[in-house]
Amino acid sequence: ELFPGPILVLAGRGNNGGDGYVIARILADCGWQVRTLVLAAENRITGDAALMLQILKQLGSEVRFIDSESSLVQEFSALDPLLIVDALLGTGLSSEITGLYRMAIDLIKQSPAQVVAVDIPSGVNGSDGRVMGAAVEADLTLSFDSAKVGHGSRPGADYVGELRVLEIGIPRAARPEVDFCCELIDELVACRLLPHRSTTGHKGSFGHLGVVAGSTGMSGAAALCSEAGLRSGAGLVTLVCPAELHATLEVKLTEVMTLPLTGQQDHLRSDNCAEIEALTGKFQSLVLGPGLGQNQHTFDAVRRLVASCRCPLVIDADGLNALVGTLDVLPGVADRPPVLTPHPGEFARLTGLTVAAIEADRFRLVRQFAIENRVVLLLKGPRTLIADPAGRVRINSSGNAGLATGGSGDVLSGLIGGLLVQGLSPFDAASLGAWLHGASADLLAEENGCAGMLAGDLLTTIPVARHQLEGVCSC
Image (cartoon, rainbow, N blue to C red; front, side, top):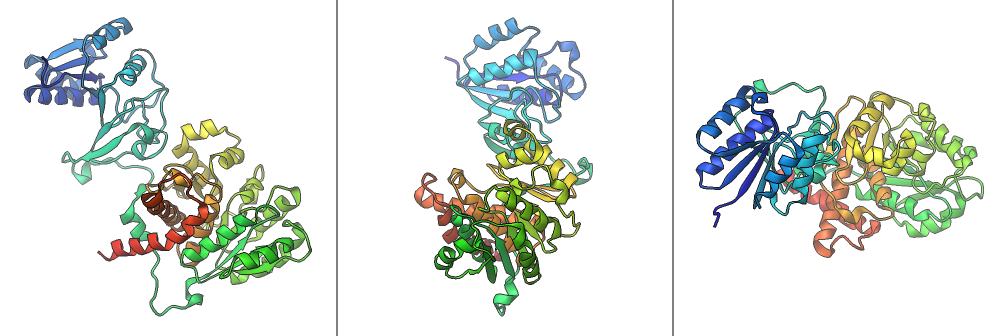
């Protein structure tokens, strides 16, 4: 009987493989039965990795050098491991995986053994989370010194399993410089972004949000967005809507002020732009798009309003659809860039890419779009990304599958608009909005699970999530 074990260490020829040799040596020294398969000729192992390999061999540990796919399959099948250590490829991977390494990844994925990845699952690009053709699906990833972008950004994040960051004594001064700032939004980061709320304030102190939304059949989007603005902590919200929807929305929204546009139409038209532009002077922020509909008259009006708006702007849903092929209307105001909040389908239309291409390269595409178009871009989905024109990126850590329901995005856009009027910058408002939105869903899931969660349910838990966050901040 083989006990404890057996363990299979799969190692490459670089530094990641060197870490694998050290792990194999320590496990063997603890009494585990360990076999190490090196996917390279011995004379191709250099530097520190070569030194660790020689120590491992000198201690009598079983090491096999693999030079063909047939020998890999033979060696792999000779052992039925309880645990596989993935030390094939590290964070510096930049090209598609082929040949022997691709076969090794496929064999790992077919094995019932538990998998521990060293630093990052092989096949995941550490800089942006792309999967380079194929990747190991780890149960546990042990990262050294700090987490990497690929650990938190999808699709790479889906391969990490449980992530543990190990301190290995690298001095701060010795850490490499990076050309951008990437940050994971957790409770502590969200706490830092939370706007101060004066105990002596009044409704005028906490900002006035304008919402231009709604059309026949989509009055719910306008209602959800507007109420979310109030639930964010904004003092006042005014919903500007087509006249035919006004009576319905005035009854539906007790606390939100409603203002009908002139003319008895059921959708926004260019004729309405002048009256909306006259109103923007009293708003500290404007949300444009939820439920506006997709007709040419509305699209023309949206483009004019985007180009002329001089208050901080959140563009969502049909507001984004109106910008397809006309991104040049974006104002590009350096100190208050507009916030765009697409889901992958809307982002695909804005960029001309497929949804599959976007999902495979989320981090890089979001950052590039924000820089090139001078906007704050929030790409929805698991591990929502937020990027700003300076190239900073934040990855949201809250939320669950319950958010995959109609109207959830309308709540998010209203929440971000409400945080903008409370004095946050566009980047911070989008970041905190994403976290509170997800945290609200997490509170609901704790009670009732994810299935059947409604967008309207989030409205009741947004204040709870904010209150709990304030408790964290006071600790």
